[in-house]
Length: 119
Figure 1 (cartoon, one colour):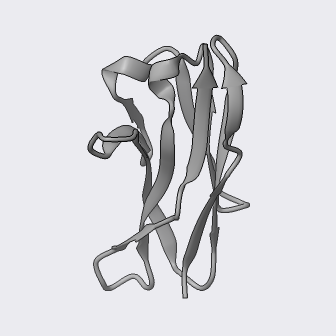
Figure 2 (cartoon, helix red, strand yellow; figure 1 turned 45 degrees about the vertical axis):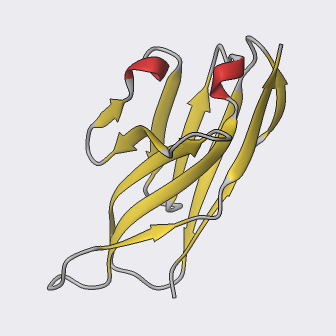
């Protein structure tokens, strides 16, 4: 059974930084890609960043957020700088993971970690 677990959320002041971590555990063949999403109260879930050999970001976080991956540890990180109140949301990690070399990847989600930016 694959588990995806986020950590690193918390309360930070405007202009501050946080680093979110996404840990992958269990038995699997490969992590194909990982995305960070966020959902603010009353809003739809939004794709923030993806890493899959290259990195992509939604426009509102470009230049402030950096997604990275540690292959050896099966970890993915989201480093967030210059945070503002509009970044307040629950942040979710989601990965496309294969269990062997023959089947399509499956998508796994974590339960999220709360990021609150105070003014």
